[in-house]
Length: 549
Image 1 (cartoon, rainbow, N blue to C red):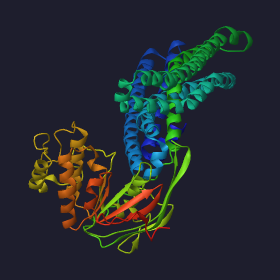
Image 2: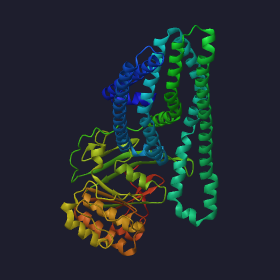
Image 3: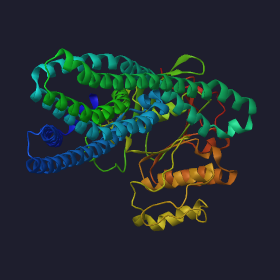
Image 4: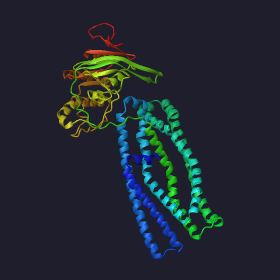
């Protein structure tokens, strides 16, 4: 099983110790069977049997307890490490690859797959102990009679193969239905993210439920129902095999084989002792199968290895020149079923200047912002900061030059990575200036009292965080789109000017043409091609930048 190999690979020592305890428990169970059998057939005295029974029972229970404790500790520790590793892998994976994977698949991995693995790993201690009991019982059978043991093993082999036919079919159905689980999470996101649109439009809501949500849930229900039918059939067949075996021993073996009453009693006792662990094993196989499937899908996500954890150099405080030389980026646009190419883009940024990027929807403005900040890797061309090329080795350090507020920004519940206690006076001043002092308070640990604000107010909090980062280059993606006219004036006419006077390079994606005069330069994107606009004092038509090809 992949899950067992997963545990062995990650913790050989502890797993070996748990295995030893489990084997000892199985040996104690086999010895206990022998004591019970010998006591019943009179070959062991009552006093000796009582002492042996007490000793073996105690040792068996203790070894099983220690085996389960060790495996449970191993399971929980490795599960926590798996969660950390998955989170770190997602953080290390290029943004474009994550976007192509889709948030619904990542959500499936983080919640459903991790939970399935947790359920399965939690069963491994129980299954492992049950297996040792089975091995102990089989060892006792072999001790009673080798010829009968060989016949028993042949019977169990045939029974196991026939048992696996429906069991394997159920596992195959579960594996095929895993994609439906991702689609279900996608549908859930449609409900939560689009709740306002669905409530406002009856026909859209009906179509969403009938065409998207219900078919997905129905397909998942059908798959799991079919799989459970096969699992139930396999369990029924397993129970039949077990009863059939006991019937053979009691009523057929004595007639066709020379079996002594002692052997018959011992075999019957061992078979009855086997019933509970075998039943548990059969009941838990579907859960283990689901855990294996989840592990397989986690491995197929093709996430990047986690970062080494080596500390980065301090975030840079200044720069002299950022050069963008012929970068391009191509991606698929689902809305018109075509591929879109941005670039080649040639651009320079220097401290103390404000650059506006304008253009229609779909012209590539946000994509350019992600390329500029190092969140996307260009297919061709290069970025240079102070003459140094940006490569995979230093891309993470390059990103530290930027502080950005994207249009789809996320607002955390605290000022993570900052030291608010050292900025207490500035914090209060920013809150007052942004008219948030009556809405939000920030404690000494940097925790925000609330983020349940309007979109415009949340953007102001994101801007506050950006200010505190104090990076050399600032990027604002349609920040003022959700602000009232008064705050637009504050943003364009005051805050941007303050950043400029502080020697920051500022890139603003904007549609607010009444503020274009604030920019030192205006860059226009048209279908992925870059043009530089003349200053607002000139009346010439837009012209293509001479550096763009």
